[in-house]
Image 1 (cartoon, rainbow over the protein chains, first blue to last red):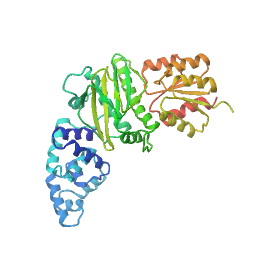
Image 2: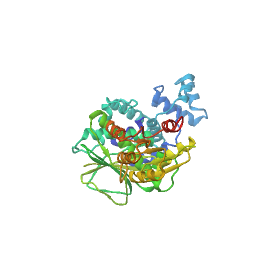
Image 3: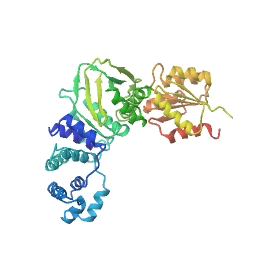
Image 4: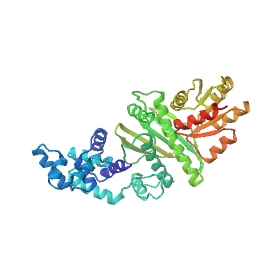
Length: 295
Length: 123
């Protein structure tokens, strides 16, 4: 589920792609089709070298990839059929586009993939399951260097945030790195405060075009411009997500948090008494900024 | 025909719209809307609906307070809480104030349909 998000971040941290390249690639991702060569590498049926061979041959004759791979005994017909049926995980699709754009060679991609898998032991994440140290490790790398209070709670909060984004908006996103800000200028922003033993302000800020796209996904309705429904969609998303967090904090730690109604801020400065942490998240429809400030 | 009026109280225009959509599909047509707890109390006094869907987190006056005041005005009021925050404490508070049922957000068609059925069919 979360592969693309983290794989994109991994590529950024390794300096393999620039943020601009990643944004470009993520935009293409939603419209790209899987390739059988990429699938074969993913399934471990072919090496990158073998895929290169077939691609080179393909340029000289007009045969299909599967056909040539069978002729060269790289694949059996059964494997080809199986690959054609297979769903390509999004992070593999990301790799495929990077290769097509000449940002990465196939060999480089294979190496990076191995490194990524070894580092994070990819598995499908059920984020409510507790034993996911890997994700914690990864999340820590997003966080600012200096110590944040309630780091554990924030990490848990972020896990849920990614979970909520996947559930209600879509999984085609990549979080960048946290930015620490003394104050937050807003574009089109909806905030929600939570009060209790652990009080904080959460907010989502984006430009109006992205806000309409975000709301369209959330409400499953097409919005082309800002209106009351767009505002409500972003507010509802925050409210659902924060509600989920409150339930978990109550169930697991007996911490009772009270949600305040969402508030819209347009082109103002977000009023935070404490340091604000801003996490840019790149979606294929644009960039959203998630803001959290511990009060 | 009995009273089939439904009061939908939620500060989100989207949530009200979605709830209304489901109720319409179930064959209900008489709705009143309120965007906060205070509006809900006033709308209840005015229309005396047979069923109230009540959000908890709202500006001006929250759903728990509104539930309390509506029940004080009409002890038979049939109020169902629809909220994203389903903590035990919150649930307990709402039930203590007289809420009949609770639906967790994001609500589904079947959850709402079941509430409507429970209230209006076989009454």
